[in-house]
Length: 359
Image (cartoon, rainbow, N blue to C red):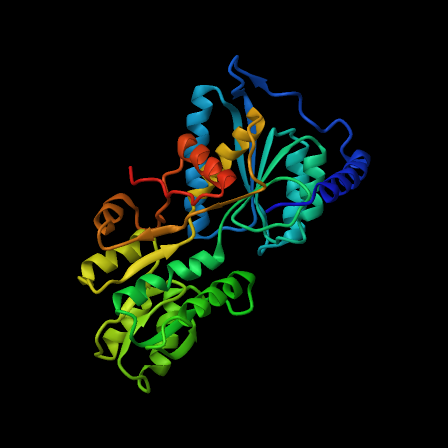
């Protein structure tokens, strides 16, 4: 995201004034650098708003990459702290303030709220900490946001299905958490795309909550009154959708699977080869976020808003992911320093960001 210079200056000044009352002496000492300007000995803290399977993969990717950087001397210490409670922004804000007292050079935040945590984020910036917000869009006067785009997720969860059914037929749209910011962007983009497909009819919409079990229940409830369904695009849940159609004795439509090992193994073992696919936000974005912070400390220009590609699994690369992933592990793009630097350069140039190649 881009912020007017005047707004950034005023907001930063206000945050500095507030922080001076509570954070005097909190800022860490300047980070050491190599002769080439590469930061060394960084202390990195990750604050996570809540835990689920996808987040556990993200945390694992962070810890693995941070351990590598510790071996090379770029990082001296790293920590992950999960906020207590049920996705509470208040509790996470308290946690972040505690982390700030440990004088990290880099504070990475996966926020429980994109609005309620703005004050504490700006306090951290004013304390001299490099802040990176991950997996959320946040309107702040400081910090770098690294995220996927929910509108693009909507497109990636629909367009392959339309291609697979040759742009015609009846479909069921599988919605996410209706009323949430992600679903609103997701759904709006899908409506824009569907406007260009007059031969595609939305026979029904279900509220699958991006969950296979819920999607199965919702589909079962309406399937008896549905015509032949060509595809069920939307917010993942493909395993549950397939099971709903199987229990009704109906042909399996094109579906969108989750990107975890269990779902992808189910897809392969079921022998489904009709253009079905998997698409989801990328837990690997945390690695790109880490290298974006390092680039910022190195003095490189980094956009305020770093928007990265999502994870997409097709029939062509399904075998790779099934062989690679554990049952509860989610597919992640293989970001590293080189691919992150290339993504940053592409964004600054106004070009598309390339998805890292499979290892």
